Length: 128
Image (tube, helix red, strand yellow):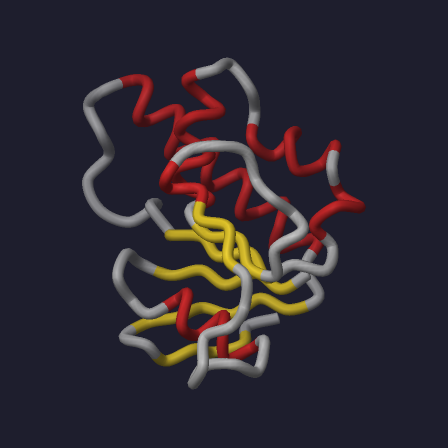
C-alpha cells in the first residue's frame, strides 16, 4: 500500500495517479469517500479518508479499527488522505474527535504502508 497525504487542494489525487503510471490519461479507478459510502477496495486509489473518518466517528466507529479489520483488502491500493491536523483546533467536540481519529488513522496507515508520500503545491516527496 502507498499512502499519499497533504493539505486540501494540493494535488494529491493527481500525484497518486502518477504513482499508478497514468497521470496523463487518468484511467485509474478511484473511490472518492468524500461523497459518502463505504470504501471500495477494488479500486486502485481511495480518496477522501478524512471525510470517511468523520462519518466513522459520527457512527461510533473508530476508522483505524475499520481499516485494521480489512487489512488484506486494501494492501494493493493507493490511499489518499487530507492532513487536517494543521490549523485551528475546532470548538465542536465531535469535530475534534474526528480530527484525532483521522490523525490516528494516518499513523496506522503510515506504519503499514510500503511507501508514504507528502504532497505540497503539487510536488510530492517520498518520506518512507
